Length: 197
Image 1 (cartoon, rainbow, N blue to C red):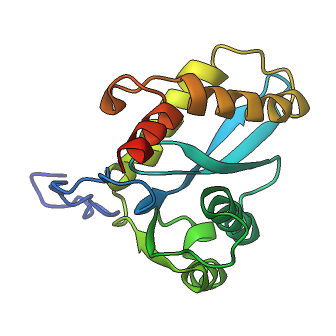
Image 2: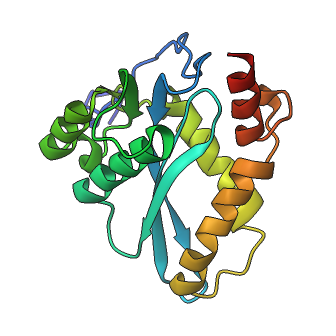
C-alpha cells in the first residue's frame, strides 16, 4: 500500500520542537508563583486530587487544596486568595505584581479564574500548549512530593490521605532539602533570603 501511495495521511498534531531556554526559577521570592494539580490513587480506588501553588524562588508550597471531585475554577480562586493571605496577610490585593504561571487546564484558563487573578494583582501567564516543561517548577514539585511522601505512606482511602496532606506539606516546606536551595528546606531558604534583605 505504501509503494502505491494508498496509505492515509497521519492525523493528530505533532509536537513542535521547542527550545526551552527560559528559566522558571526567580531570584527573589514573591515575583512568580506557579500552580498545577495531581492525583493520588488510594488503595480502595478512591482518587484525591490536589491543587497547589509554590513560589518559583524558594519552592515553598504556599497553599494547597484537595478534593475527591474535580479541580474547578472556584478551587483555584480559593487557592489564589489563600496564597495571597498566607504571604501578605489579610489583604484583598497583592502589594506588587506577581506572575501566576499555570498550564492550560480548564480550571486555570476559565474566564472567571483569569479575571479573579487579575483583580488580585496577578499577571496571568500560561505555558505553551503541549509544553509541560515550561511549568517545570510545578512538575518537579509533583514528582518530589509523590516520590518522598505519597509512595512511601499508606493510602487506604481518601479520608486518610486528605488527613495526612497537611502533615506532608508542612514536612516538605520545613524539612525537605533542595539542591537548588543549597540543601536547605523551602522555609529555611526563604528565611535566609529575608535575613539578607
